[in-house]
Image 1 (cartoon, rainbow, N blue to C red):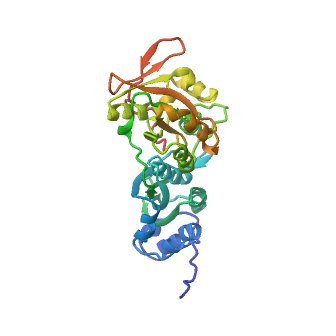
Image 2 (image 1 turned 135 degrees about the vertical axis):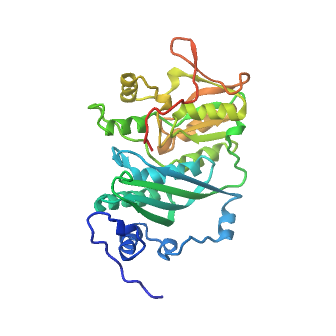
Image 3 (image 1 turned 60 degrees about the vertical axis):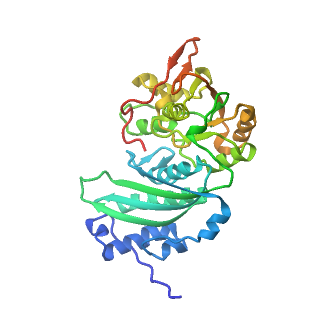
Length: 349
């Protein structure tokens, strides 16, 4: 087998030539991307990745496939960056179906002028996140847009995972008597991004909660294979996920306000801006609806996993008023928790 000479990218910033399909683009791909992601499927540099269908079928009964795009501003923020966000976000979209993540694609849209050092930092962050999640980046694409026609860097990732036999997690399966669980403090990511933009000039320490959730979901399924619904609470937050569950399953959901975990720092940001943490984006939090009889066992399994140590039951599924989500306040009253209207925080993920 012939070994290709390793190409080197000598430029300090991305130019239009790096997206033109010639030598400069090849240098970028081989040095920055292959240098970081390094695996046989990607290194072949074909226009597609190829998989052994029999090997995938041996691991489960269904394939899960998802795609997402990331346009976060700023691209670096406390606790993460657009690279780790792109990997973990797509891993989590697979994970909440019960799938074991296997393969990832990476599409980069780069603005002319982006420092190569920043691109390398993002790519290395993607590699670290992919290794931690046990997923392999096997194919990709690179485009460069003129200066002023983008905003540094946009990333699209698509993922393939394998769903084990017997797992059926769906927004349509919520039933009266089910319990609603979250795996820790909500709103951290949205608040961290907002604070990183510097508009509020706050001195508080806020970090994204960005993390992979597939291991947590597998731990949950190990004690309760019949989990009814799971979603990661990214854009629109916990409130939007629960409204989707209630509408799709034609049930109502009631939350207990004093059970919902929100950091004091996030609560303070919300109070300053008149916002609600239940609508803030998360990148390492899931909302699970589980049968009431197994709720405590699932909760214990979650609390024993590093990604779920702060897990709590925050509500229950009820009959009547299909599509309605309510929250019982600390003062004993109730208010309706509607779907997010408009955009609280643009360019959040």
